[in-house]
Length: 338
Length: 118
Image (cartoon, each protein chain N blue to C red):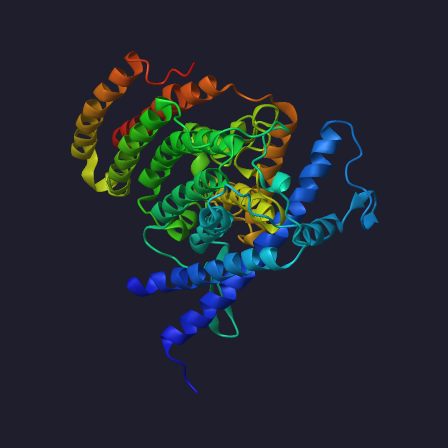
């Protein structure tokens, strides 16, 4: 029995997509627990230690949270734009998940004489796709804030949008240096070319700019102005409850995982180990966990930026640095003749 | 190859289905006990006044325009970066000229106080 190659591709895509989505949702659920625990330890508190505790860590807490979220009342504020208000969380979580379509997770291997690729799609415009999907993520937030028809939501959404689009510029420019070295937009090729030396060695400035811009992009401290509790209650999420709130939360954490994965893939060799040691998905997971831990650490340590400082930093510091990085890279490449 | 994009379409379909299921589930489970106070916009316990859709700062508009400008510039950078090894000094001078033109506008916005929020 032989199947049409298109049918095989389709079946493969369905299986991989479901595996990736389930893995991301599990990672999201447990990240909420890890974050609460890490922040508690940084602040000398105990942290979650009740639901299904093993060794003082509440391992079943995410499941309890999920059940609670599902059975909470879901309401539509009377002045809200019902359709926009409802689809906004869906857009937020959908775009967060879609970025994983081009992420290479593991080197291609032969299983039972059949070649398996550990990515959903290897398109020759991978990096461009990531940026495009990342830009769409803004829609979830701005529509959520607009649809709620609440002053806090509106202000939070406006701030968030201005912040995300400002830092997206630096984010995109920071990646250009990597593209010049790799000569490709396909993430699989970029990872393969880092089998011996990671790009971070050639692009330290680009790496730092990317990481700062990425933290701002996912609205984490010290850039969490959209949700500045003391001023805006909860920003664009103020009017949301039940699973709709959970979807926004999910989008935020999955975006954290995504920007960490992009940082690992573009600068730290993705699934490649240092000097080509045992390439595999475990390296990628380790690198992602490292970045997420740094983000949690920053949340536990740093105070929040003021809004004018935030915008000035994005446009007057990060953007010129990112442009300078491109031209320095270009000059070095031409002079050394790489 | 167009067939490379097929898995992405599959993923879009599955992710859309996931979002729809989650939103429907959220509407079906849980109690439904609305009352006027619960459904009014949250304003820290004060009676809400007016609509939230009022005029907002022109700075947001300016930021959006600047973003479009620089985002398009990034799109120009990407193919240039991929082919940079082949383009060599010619590529660098061409992009340098393009950047120079753009930087004039950037410096103008800076001097006009376009990045100042107060």
